[in-house]
Image (cartoon, rainbow, N blue to C red):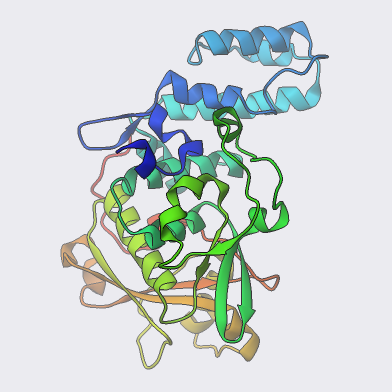
Length: 337
């Protein structure tokens, strides 16, 4: 893909290799991104032990690190940062691909910092969406790794990147974005037919809003993202249809795409009714069907699966794509190693 067609450079996807199946292989160059994070770059007052560890990993980011090397760091916060970093690095290194590392985290509920999980999700999505020509799908995919502030006005629901909304005009937070000299956001434009041409060049600024109003392109694009995410990670082929409302449908299986939606789904599953406040927070509803029935649990074949997305009381949508991995009634055939 040419540079002008590229997007999300700040996730470091261009530093990764691909295997024969198109999955991401870890490289030393990608690991060095973490060493550029402000939490790990030794400050002027850092002790010799911290500087030696940082220098050693810059030279060989896969070199073994003994607990005593981290324990020797004088600053307690720095020791904690390095412990998390080494644990994360070791997890990535031991897996054949980044996709396998992600699936292991999700299925075994392994605790790592959200910033690490977000970057990993973004890199995998960037790989899954390579060659995607629909900019609306690319913008919708941002919701998998960046919370959105939702603005409701005159019956329209608009998603704005939460961090961009609160830090508009400041410097980019990603160390790779800073190293690449990518500009910070200065204003937010609505993604539309007249603005799609500018998305890729400004994609690392996360400064374009998306219309999530029922019946509009935003929710359909989110359905496309889910479809490609499942195909890439789980090798399953699904059809996802956005719905305006849930009427007379047997809720045989559902997946909440976020914590709020899971609570709403639990209420419906247990036969409860939604009050007006809960209904107002439900911003996305989808029906998922499997093209190959053998991909799902036998007892549910022929049934639809419903996906729900909801905003918090503070109007934030924080999607959890890991719920699709753990929550769908699928037969797992892919290998995780």
